Image 1 (spheres, rainbow, N blue to C red):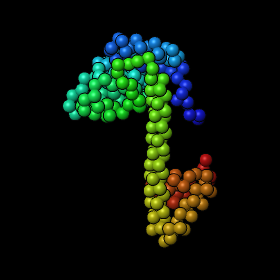
Image 2: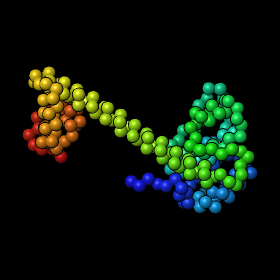
Image 3: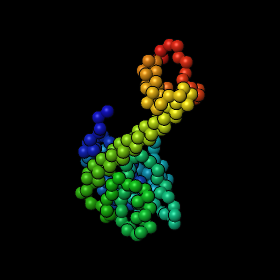
Image 4: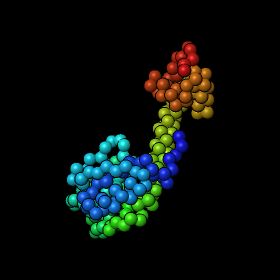
Amino acid sequence: MTRPSPFSVRGRHALMIMRDERDMSILRRQLGRLGMSVAETDPEALVVPDTGIDVIVLDADSIPIKPDSAPPLKTSVPVIALIGTETPSRLKWLLDLQPTSFLIKPLRSAGLYTALVVAFDCAQRRSEGAAYVEKLEDRIRARRVVFGAVLQLMRNHGLCEDDAFTLIRQTAMRHRTTVEQLSADIIALGGMPNRSSRTA
């Protein structure tokens, strides 16, 4: 799948979570000029649709925070935070939110496109990084399963490690399955499964 260009913003959908009419007017105008559609919601509601939103522009100053409170917004959509108050508690809350980009208030007509590009690129990199970590974790889990199956065959048949793994690999190839799946079957059954025919 081709990675979407972070520079291409036309046709994307933005959700503004803010109250300040001046800021909202600036953003509506600029997002419209960039060819983006805009939806709005009140910071008190913080209702984010599950689909159809490509970026959230959030006025971080408009969200009330309490000591030790987690950010109320949990989403995989990239977030551009508008920052005006630079108190430690507000900045801590903002760091926990993990925005992908930010704009400093008072807003001006410049800087939004850069914030959007950075947000889309950062979100894409985070997604790719998370997918890579998940793939590595799957490999680690699979290796544990294979190692367990090798130990099972070593105990049951008095094989050395290399011979046990070779047996698993050859059997998996013969029955057209993966080493990991065959290993899981060996562990579940307590030994080599009896397969009289090839499996898809």
